Image (tube, rainbow, N blue to C red; front, side, top):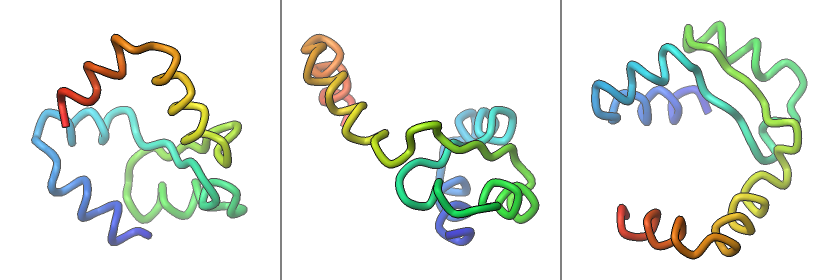
Length: 80
């Protein structure tokens, strides 16, 4: 997990990786439920790490918001 996060951050545009370094990352899904994962990743990556309050449902909640907002969905899809 650490290597994947590091690789992803290293492949970001400089201004985005600066935002990540400043604001940190948020974990969602099953990994966000691992006890102590935020502290472990914070120590390994030297960036702030947070977990979502409802991480196991984060993706479906986001998809629901997109479906309910067609203008935003069009914007997101046009940027892919």
